Image (tube, rainbow, N blue to C red; front, side, top):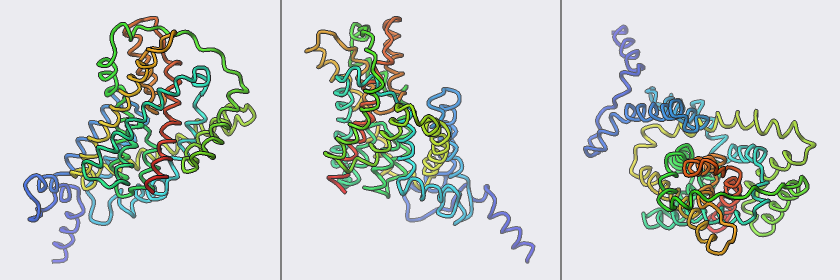
Length: 392
């Protein structure tokens, strides 16, 4: 009998025994199928994400850790021993780094240290493009309210429209912690899929002649301007929107260390070692919320739909704003750079440059697109501050 019990315990601990869960009579047909075979479904989903990251190279630094974290979270384990559970190593890291909002702030420091605000300073008009892209946030917020989400949950969902993973995590941890997993997965997934989502929208809203517009070379920005800019941004944020100061402060501190010229070691650490370490942990932790019990729910699907709607509205709003500005400008701007108003730096700027080159081989838009791109980073942080001030 003891041998049989031991063999049963051994069998119960295997993945084969835990892959397919027992039926739950309280669930309907579709729910029953998801309940029993959810882990198997999610393993295929995570393998697909790995394929996108490795084979198609869709932002592999984000997608590979996220997908692998999803694989780890769906490994069949006995109850209470799940890798992504409260006592698993991914669960512990999630609680300390994401649930408490630490990782997003560190990521923002690294982003600031890697960001050149020169294109925005040289062409301040592009700030309007970064601002226009924030319509995606507030448009999705209204739609989420229509879908029946609470104002706090709607605000957290809306921030996905900024295409800014750290900001989405930070806001959600303050407004709707119970939705943190689904929103983090949606935000980072759409960031990684910028090269897939944005081009059709950009081409739909622009003509061939508009995509061929060439822009003049930007003026050279002085070192003094680059040092003063982050300080001024922080001071303005302190005066008008203190609730955005944690994000804006981390961003501007990282940028100041880069531009001041006397803290190269700190800047180098933030640009490389620090942000790489946090990206590894953050990606794995976001992926840990791809477990079947968290992800295969109707609420999660609603969030994914609202997220892509928010991102699409943000992309479209930036392009449309550029077209409106051209009605009043003598030196026309290429509307494609308006799509870079989302804060996926530098992915959105690269996509704008790629589409521009397809229309005109001499049309190099990368530095021009970086203006609205970095404006979008500031804009999403400001939008986050507004939501926190109103909804928290």
